Each structure stands twice: as structure tokens, then as C-alpha cells.
Length: 315
Image (cartoon, rainbow, N blue to C red; front, side):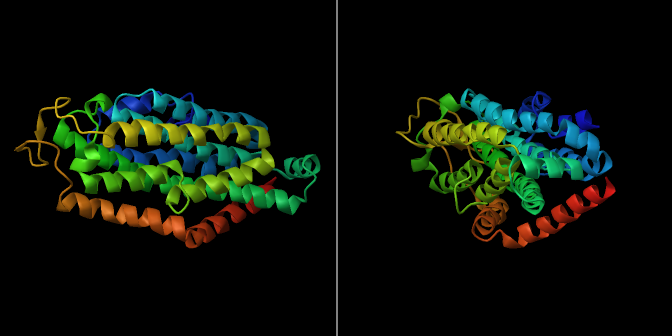
């Protein structure tokens, strides 16, 4: 069961299908794949695997935690090496879904009363504090699932916008687009910084709660996972913002531009009405969740507490 859900997430090392799937898919396919389909694997881990096999989940939880932490760091490092913008975003999904696996795995370490009591003894904390940390890890994982759909869906749509005009996703062909497409630059900045986890945007709280819960339960793997935060900043700021938007625009790099409607253009053109209307709700959600995540967290926390209570009563 775990293997099936792990391939769907996808979790390292079962992720190899995802970059190719995103690269070959049309923009709409990538948005749906990132926004909805990947979450089914994580949902299966959380709502099917843990309640059905709590003892086995607690036994194998250290491996789940390890795979999640490795995915965070590995996915971020691979992003730095990418030359295709869409493939870069695809590997960022591997990294960001690693937070989900880390949070679920951390909570799984205390799925049974015995493992809960053992963790309380090891960390010199009350069982209630350990249970709260497990709930916090689950809250972070579920919020990350929600945020990933919004943020990465927006990023894939933004990649599709530039591809419709440039007919390439090669990062070496871009540069200086901020001066030519300021509205597009602003939208990409918001989505990219939300993906980075900048405070005030949606990605921050999911990472915060995931690591807050994980540090209380699996501190060493959580510390290892934080390396991914630093590397994420590198590929967001350098590979995307610097390479695509900053610097002087050099028209010799790419001399065949079209409008979104396929007409010849002398250079890059900015986003048009229907593209703005598509992205505005996603951008608004990034700000709203980043500033006021309480309603979502309250909703997720109730489910997390009920799940933990159900599993521990069951065992």
C-alpha cells in the first residue's frame, strides 16, 4: 500500500516519472497534475494507510521520515541544475511534497500508545505535548498539500504563459524580462516567493508547522530537511528570478516571439486579460493564507486530532 501511494505523491525515490510527465503535458495538464492528482497519494497515506495499519506505520515511520527529508533536499538540489523552466518547477514539486511526507512520517512515529509513551520518555515531555506535536506535523502536511496546489499550479500556468510567447522553456534564452513584462514579473515574484516560503505568503505556514511538529518528534531528520529551505532560496532567486527577469534584455538570445494568440511580436508581450483573471484568485489565496491561515488550520487541526485519537484508541 505504501509503495502505491508513494509513487503517486511522488516520494523519493519513486519520483522519476513526474518531471517527464510535466515536461510532456500541456499547461492545463500540469496544473491539474500538480494541483489535484499528486495530493491523492498524500491523502492515501494520511487517511487510509495510517488508520488501517497504525502499528506497521509506527514501525516503518523512521523510513517515511527519512524519505521525506531526503526528498526535500534532493529535489531542491536537482532544481538548481535544471535548464528547462518547467522541469525545474516539476522537481520543486518533489521537494515540496517531501514536506508532506516528513510531516506524516513524524506523526506516524507516535501512532500507537506504546510509541507515544516511548517518545514522551525519550524527549522528557508529556504525552499531551507529544500528541500536540504530532497534530502540528499533520496540520503542516495538510496545509502544504493545499498550498502546493495553489502555488505550483500558478507556477505551471506562468510557465505556460511564457512558453506560448517564446516557444521555449530554456532558461539560457531568457533574461531581462522584468523590463518588458512587468505584470508577468510581479505575478511570478509572488508565486515564486510563496513557493520559497516567504513569511506573509501561503508557503511559510505549512513549512513552519511541519518543522515545528517534526523537530519535536524526529529532530535530526527535521534539521537535515531544513537544508532544503536554503537550496530552495538558491533556485528561486538565482535560477528563476535572476536568470529570467533581471539584467539587461538581450534580443539576440531569442528572436522569435509571438503574442498569446499566435501573432508575430517584436519582443515579449505581457499577460492579457484572461490570464490575469485566471491568476488573480490564486495570488489572492497566497496572500490570504499567508496573512490569516487560522480558518484552514482550525479545520485541519480538528481532523488531525480526531485521526490521532481514533488510531490510538484502536490500538
